[in-house]
Length: 144
Length: 72
Image (cartoon, each protein chain N blue to C red):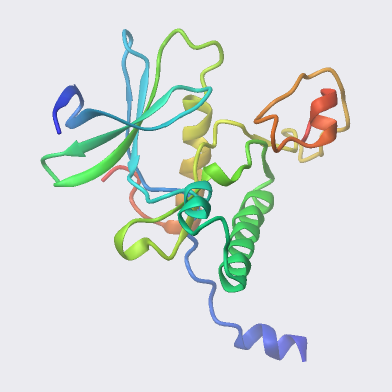
């Protein structure tokens, strides 16, 4: 039965996880520039825009999309430390029904070069936003 | 809107889209392609540069999931 379901399952739609990158420009005197696709409002702005209340349908859609994005991260053996509503953006124009994640500066691999998962360690200090950090992150343990 | 700076073929406006610990995101525009873009800038005196870490991560996603040309 599972086999049948699996075979009949339509091909997974192409996921829109991160905005398109057009260019990366390095300058010696003025730092680095990353040119990317312009996106719409983030979830925090959207929440305020909607009168600080999302409908059930919207909530479920957001949860579903966030889980899908996380699935892509974790299946690539990556962990996203900087997760917050302000880092999830809707697209613009015809892509306004898609959810993207931005600011991947804190994304880290949770395995070493041999594929072994890192073990628990302490003394790293707080990383990412304090508002959404886990309790153990506040204690200074690693999140990977 | 006045565009004060240029980087490559992109013009950077003084409108700030977002700000974080890393630097600033500005609105930009490419006249050639008539395309609105977002430009993330990280100054060179930052302690631990994030953009260099971010780029390979985005690249790997784009290859696997979008199969689009990275630099158009």
